[in-house]
Each structure stands twice: as structure tokens, then as C-alpha cells.
Image (cartoon, rainbow, N blue to C red; front, side, top):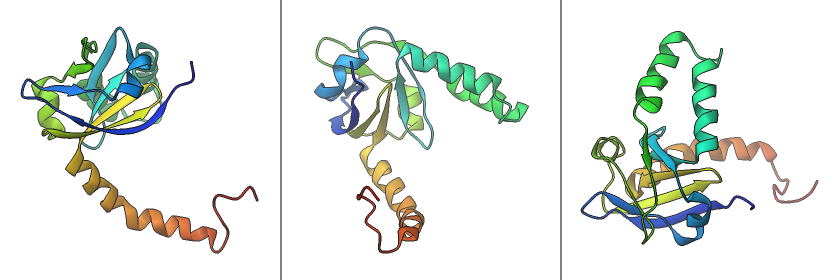
Length: 150
């Protein structure tokens, strides 16, 4: 199965469950893990991606011991096992909902083996914050068409 990527709008109900967009549900069946993501989102991760995350965060010489401890305590140790229910929702623990400032309007980003659940307003604010530096880097292409095969 080819992994799907993309985004979709969603909602968080009053019981803390987020509805997973239909087109992502097939690749997120069975056991999943939920934890704190980067920059105020929640990650929902497949088991193989979870194992890679644990290995990379725990064994990487890229991180100082303090950084490894931080990631262990805030990502690895906070994880919980979850499953999509019969109507396509995943319950997000209250601690993670608070961390990500999730409200009723959410954006779900699929990166193949990981879903990132954002508060929609927080996600737009992040895009706006990053837009100017990103535009400057794209300007390095000058007059070339970045979509051409040159």
C-alpha cells in the first residue's frame, strides 16, 4: 500500500475525540501510539514509525544527554496506545489536548506513517510565522520555475 500524505479539516468533540479524515483511516488501523509532537501538535504514529522514533531519539549522537532526556520525558514517556473507533475517531488524552491547545476546529496533517493533529488557528499562526523566511529561501531560485524539470 502506498502511504498517503496530505491534510484535512477535522473536529474535536466534547469528549476529546478527533475525527480522522476518511482518506487516512486505512493506513492507521490497529494499534497506534499518540504522543506530544513538535511545535504544539499531537502525533499519532504507526508502530514501525514509533520504533524508529524511539531508536533515533534515544541513540542519536546528534543530541546532548539533556536533549535526549527531554525527548524521552516529553515524547517517549508520554505515549499512549490508541485505536481508531468504529466511526473514525481517536481519543486524545487531556494532557496532550492542553499541550496542543486543541479546540473544536482541528487540522490533521498526514506524513505517511504519522498524523499531526493541530488546533487549526495554531497551525495557521505557525504557517504565517514561517512564511517570510521560507519565501526568502525560494527567492534563491530567481526567475527559474521551481516546477520545471531543469
